[in-house]
Length: 298
Image (tube, rainbow, N blue to C red; front, side, top):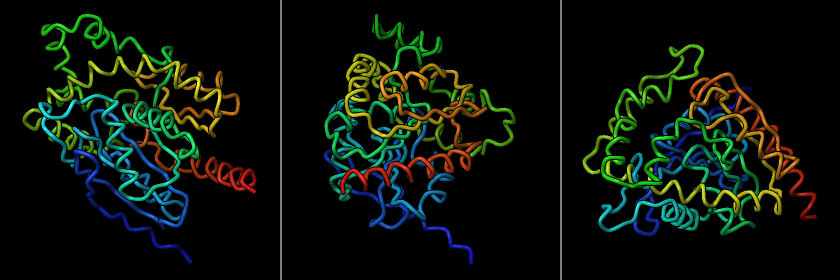
């Protein structure tokens, strides 16, 4: 008998200064997986993955402040930094009662998730990184305009980055490196573009571009965490990503020799084309990690 797919529910909860929108599926009694999206998207990027995990796991995917349907304060009242995003997501996990969870991190979700792990290492049971970088060798030349802004945060350098917020740039992030762009659903980049174009959101995104330098400064701390704590770690990587290169995935094994690395012939948004393959890798990986955790707890 075929099991009926788990229903996805769409909820909001107050978390610090934000009202966080999130998608949730699966039995709350099952091991939890927290899905953290990146730029320029939202929890919508997990729409295909969630049903593939929810029969076995309690899956939760929030929208970060400044993205998706989360309601957060104006930037005059709330500093849009990665430290503050991590604080909101930490408050979110408390608000919905997630005591322990694996994290799936992508793009911006990586520094948010890794900051959570540094703050609460005993709460993070495993890490799945899908093009979620923590090593300088993983940064491509595509970061050069943003790095110039870090080094010289002038209005001119800030203005230059506005091109990253255009609909064409968003679509390109989804389709670059994909063997068949017809596999990428147009509602993905279209929704992202509409939400990016909300009044004031451009300045929020430019603030976060500037603050991304704080994540690179924390790379040694993230790496020390991987080396000392050795959390079960799976990297599932679109190998044609124009921003986060395959050496960034391989580098996890330098600090955690037990890390598993899988490459897929696709781009930055690997779930658009390889959700089933990635879900299979996650299910096998988490099955082993959960079993190992139970043995270690015994």
